[in-house]
Amino acid sequence: MGVTGKLEVEVDIKASGDVFHELLGKRPHHVSNMVPDHIHGCDLHEGEFGELGSILKWDYTLDGKKSADKHLVEVIDEENKILRIKLMEGSDLLQVYKSMKISLHVIPKGDIDAILWKIEFERFDDFGPYPTNVMDFIIKVTRDLEAHHVHV
Image (cartoon, rainbow, N blue to C red):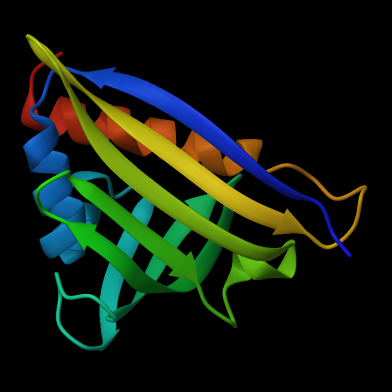
């Protein structure tokens, strides 16, 4: 049996958190136009963009290696501004981790918003890596998306 864990990072942003929720929840296929150095595409495999149960395939570069992941959209909570995806079989990250879910939660903080990113994962064994490189990647993408929407 592997080890389960959770990484959380809260990133304060100058752009509206609603922009992040809308973009990643309903128009993820536009992300590669905004951060082409990190994300190279997002294709719809089943369902509709912005719909629960949809399956998306992301092409990206992580640690200098081109990778691809399929994920299932598990949660789209418009009221609380929460998105959650679950990586599916055949995903590159699931060669390293037994399971992984990634969620985004927009948190209003007065004059600014924050994005709370959470990675829930299970390692194959006690000695596997923690997904800190994935969280670092997510933070870079967040900052680049912020810069695209606001001159920071």
